Length: 246
Image 1 (cartoon, rainbow, N blue to C red):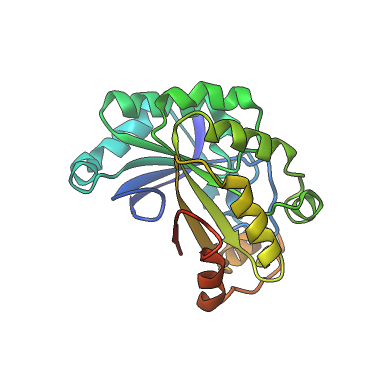
Image 2: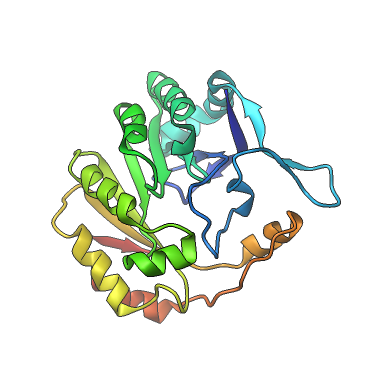
């Protein structure tokens, strides 16, 4: 049993093909720009002035029953299921149950993680994961703590271990204007991931302000940032030695 925020069907941004993205509640970071602020608190939350609740208990079997409804689309598009959040590895045992069940059903599995968890959490799920979507937000540890509430020591340690497992990894970088959209940060990231053949893609994710409205609905305030322009992203893309997408 675990706490789910949402099951998003026909997702095309969280791994290859058509996918169902399962959003688990709870996160170890508190990013100033968070696009899913309703996912940070591990407990269910009620919207202000509304009966809507963010977060419901589900069993792994219930999740897989929903995921299996679109099996034909996964097969036809080389898609599958992605666990996201929040940080799905905060519910590592539950995540492992879902991923194992998906693999038994012949479904491609992806895990979207920020990596700020003990390595033991990864060990529980890696046998059932085909693709890791790894967020690398800011390389400078002090700046990382300023904007996410945590330094990046554990994240970078786990990232190196992941790169050496042989599992396919896509690195995702949220591009936040005035925070990490510098050549220095991009070059540091490119150098950090260089030389690992199983890192098959880098995705630069431009900031958007949709999280602000959700934060407001929970009585939270969120700063608005700048969205870097396409030209800047194209320049940053040249620093990487693998496929880069926006």
